[in-house]
Amino acid sequence: MSKRTRAICALLFLSVLLLPVFGATADAANYRVNIATATTGGAYYPIGNAMAQIWSKKLEGIKASAQATAGTPQNIELMMNKEVQIAIGQNGICYYAYYGKGTYAGKPNFPYKDMRGMLSLYPNVMHWVIRKDAGIKSVADFKGRSIVPGAVASATEINSREMLAAYGLNYMKDQGEVNVKADFLGYNEAADLLKNAQTDAAHIAGGVPTAVVIDMMSSGAAELMSMEPEKIQAICEKFPWYYPFTIKAGTYPKQDKDVQTVALANILFTDASQPEELIYKLTKAMYDFHTDLVNAHKATKDTTLETAVKGMTLPLHPGSVKYFKEAGVEVPLNLIAK
Image (cartoon, rainbow, N blue to C red; front, side, top):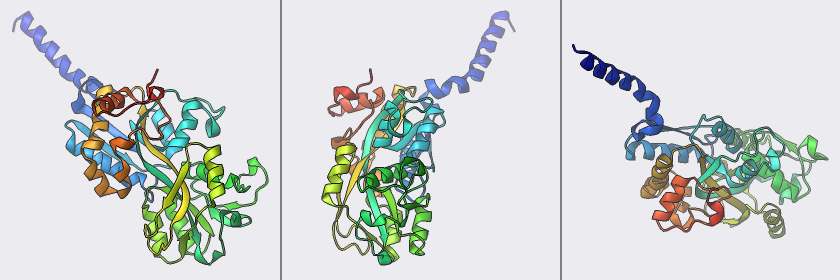
């Protein structure tokens, strides 16, 4: 074998060795996408699984999987640590993280300025589920009662704090007088407590309908409760990512009247370091295969190009911007990353 032939063979061998190293960023055929969702009782998890199925089966060379998490705050941490590539999150919590405000004020590594939005998914609706025989007519009646506001430091739990503040209620020892008892649990555990008469109310944040709320309402032990119009207005004025929302009668088993509450946008977010090609393809697939999403969870019926950037509080990833411009979606200038 000549020196020239041996050199060519050596180069070919070296290129084979290096292919796995560079493939994840340079070759779309080697993209692996981990999606952070939330607990299995809410809407994030089944929707995340549906996205993973679509991206893996419909897009050549992309392998995606969804993982259950504690929700938006953990998803943000996972994203910062490069453990996930895509995550579902609540708009308000993402706003706090990007700007280093609210629950992230003064925390190390925040503001998280490399957060990038992909698209608005659907309304995240605040459900106050109460025990039927608890004698509760208003959130104000939670005073002195036991409730489940969500898992500790989860987006749902933070939502609970924000809403209860409008009623002068608090369960956090470091934030003033405690006048509500809180059990910090996930959705499925909250449902068990309520059905077994071990708590008076639970807050469930999720798309309409949310599986665990269906379960609670079907049991006959629970009912949905409205908030007063003036309290809804106060919440929306203080925390502008919320907006009024009506859960129509008949949405859940044994729900015979409309329920007035608030909602905010659920979004897909990523990190600025993710390749433009990857985010473009993932974003495009969300609309190309919209029917598959809706078949997995009805909440995603609102995942449309008409609402693609509704309520978005983060600058968009260039891959999403590229697709939206091609699709004729008007992208506000404040959502273009500087």
